[in-house]
Amino acid sequence: MRILGLDPGNAITGYGMIEEVKGGYTLVEYGALRTPAGLDAAQRLLLLYDALQKLLDKLNPEQVAVEQLFFNKNVTTAVPVGQARGVLLLGCAQRGLAIAEYTPLQVKQALTGFGRADKGQIQYMVCRLLSLGEPPKNDDAADALAIAITHAHYYRSRDRIAAARQQAAAGRKS
Image (tube, rainbow, N blue to C red):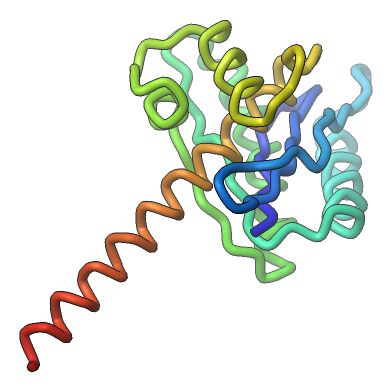
């Protein structure tokens, strides 16, 4: 399965595509979608939408994972980031892609088992799980890869639970 992780931002949106392979994950691509400063909000959102559409055409993901917003201090950045996030969700939904959303806490727990992990610990695990020599230079892209890996972990767990429930139900009918 090909999973695209997105870390929404007004100026920089990180993206990272992974593919599940037997026994782990492989890196497909990562990077950042950037919108130039100085443009009004509507123009930036339009540029982000267009860049996302080109990215989806190029990478052809099967599923998308997006970070949920979490702001405990700077509420003024929450609005533009929320708008960018809305554009990403819309662009993916228009294509009928399955979209999952994860909080920063869920990402930290999925990658490190510890909800208070710092960026260095997350980047270390991204490198380990994707066999990278060094973390991506762009923090937003590294976060997007972490979000994609989180989705792969959760998705696999949901599949296992569903299979176990089906087996249990079949056993009761016998």
